[in-house]
Length: 180
Image 1 (spheres, helix red, strand yellow):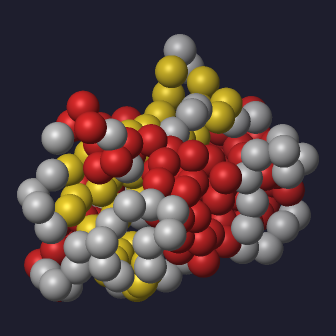
Image 2: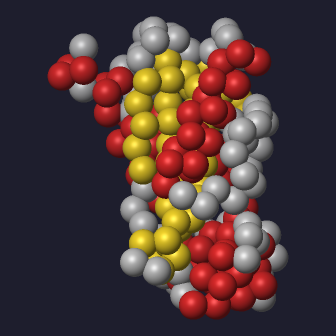
């Protein structure tokens, strides 16, 4: 548990990302008072990153940019969703990066979601995954809802639940004695 109110900058105004950060910090730091503040910053990568490396770099860049813009925080969290081709199949995933005032940092990658052929075509054409989802599934603004995870699992897993679980793992070095 942290000793004081903790200021956490999340590098997005997307309510799904904000909720995931709030939940992950509440799980890993129970009883601590968290102030979660959204701050939109540039990722320095394409709107729809198309590789594992580009997606990870986007999360890291968001953290670095947030640190420059809001240096008084205790934690900065960058979340970046991306796509990549593995064995000719398009998959979706996300990278989470967390940095703390004491100079530590951590990154984790989410589980990988295989995309259906129609989604693959739209993603390969450069369409952002949320927009591709909306066209394939006839939805509106799915990236601020369950996302591809929710649409393809009938809500068993959602973008928020996947991001929350991934962030809980990214916070392990901040709560486990083995990283002291």
